[in-house]
Image 1 (tube, one colour):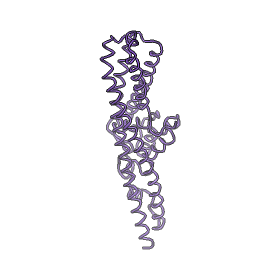
Image 2 (cartoon, rainbow, N blue to C red):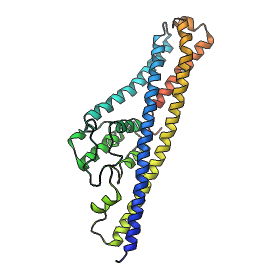
Image 3 (cartoon, rainbow, N blue to C red):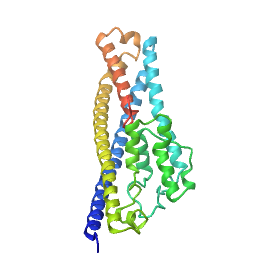
Image 4 (cartoon, rainbow, N blue to C red):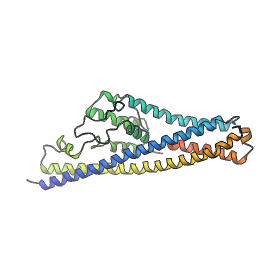
Length: 289
């Protein structure tokens, strides 16, 4: 058959690109889940730090301002988590459903369950569209899910351009479980000549490679943020354990604390470390400075 080998080459190239894409996609989800797990641990340490600082009596105004700043920025994270939980409850994810399940070709890793959806949303710092995904199905559900993960926040100035690109890659042309076979059978390559099939397959493979590179870069960024989160949490936790008994020995009274120069300095370090940890807690992937 004319151009039969060319067609076979194009289809194989497409299948290989799909496999690489799916691996990268899976890694984004897995690394996001790890990051969310460690952020949850760090949020508990931050809360412990804030509670200790808040108990200090006779605080001067500048210290009150710093403690309030910690509270406000920590509540920003808590409110965001609550917002995501509300979105999940209003979608079919909360009932164990999978977004985009109606698409031909099956469901892949991008059909997020509750934990993965929470991890992705917190990693990219994005949530909410006002769309009840549970009322949709098929392609409409996919579009709504993508909007929930990226579109609404991109329009509102949330995730930066890099973050938006990663989200689009995560739910890109072969996202939501559409494989190479589905691409052939659902119209992209169907009813065409061998040459056209090969050309379209090669073009799609090239597009997939671009999306895969974006996802691989995203995994690296998530990994770096996760490492920094673990490091900061460990340092903050250790610092908190060391300073707590010293502050309590002075009845958590700033009038006594300020007389101890080293302890006063250590208190300032605790505040700075807590604020730095909160900044990491609220940092989305791909956020433009």
